[in-house]
Length: 233
Image (tube, rainbow, N blue to C red):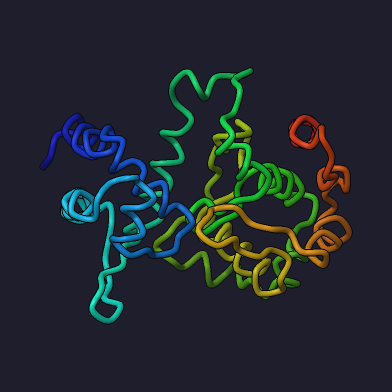
């Protein structure tokens, strides 16, 4: 049996390389991408990217699938995304009062954390779920009893790395995001983890889920107002 210290050291050493970290972060929206696209995301040549991809696949952090003559890569599972999200909470850039980078601000409001909703909207919705009860799951056609039979945990509270407050993950978090997308409350943004809230989505999050409508205000103080509302939710 592998020593616990080795089980931590091996994947940590892989992600310590900036190129491999960039590749993994590019796949945090749960979608698959070609080796060529991942090379562009990481700012390296396709040959260099291929060498890194082989190491990540061998470590079972990534999986691949054939798309014609090309290989497309994706995260091997939710546990990889959970680990990466947890690592984003460590270090000086994750301390209270930190200034977020431009890239972080771009995806702060609503983003995919592999297969569930994260960011300020994810935190706000998670805070509302206890008050909503089972009715919201029925409305979104979510069979909680069926989800509870899966090997994956039914729910998991991830500490959101931009907000430092929990958003819901696990099978239930994934089912909720699927429901939002199916009803076109949220729309994906090409080549990004960011999610756009549609007009019907804004209405639904406010009226059905009880999210404060000020969270959706789009003005020069948006980051400050959203952060304050997220904290007060």
